[in-house]
Amino acid sequence: QVQLVESGGGLVHAGETLRLSCAASGSGISIKAMNWYRQAPGEQRELVARITTYGTTNYADSVKGRFAISMDNAKNMVYLQMNSLKPTDTGVYLCNADIYGLGPAYWGQGTQVTVSS
Image (tube, rainbow, N blue to C red; front, side, top):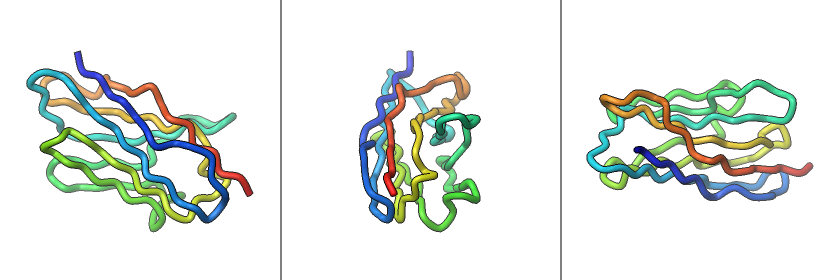
C-alpha cells in the first residue's frame, strides 16, 4: 500500500509564504505524477498544481505565478512553495500520487492552510 504524508500547513497573514511537503512511501513504487488539490470551505475540490516525472507542470489560474511545485524523484517527495498567499488560498491541501501500475488513487490526510487578511 502507498502512503502519503503532508506537512507544512499553518496559519499565516496575507502576503506571507508557506511550503508544503508530501512524502510518498511504499515498497517499489514508481511515481508517474504528483498533484496538490485544495478543498476550500464551501467550494469544490480544485487541482492546484501537478508535476510529472518528465518535468511537466500545471497550475490553476488562481495560483499561477505565486505557487511552484517541485519533486525530488529520489526521495519520492513533492513540494508546493506558496508565495504571496491570499485569504482565498485558505483550505485543506491534499497530496495525490499517480503511481505507475497502480493509478492515481492515493491521497494524503491533508494539511490545513489558513490565510488571514
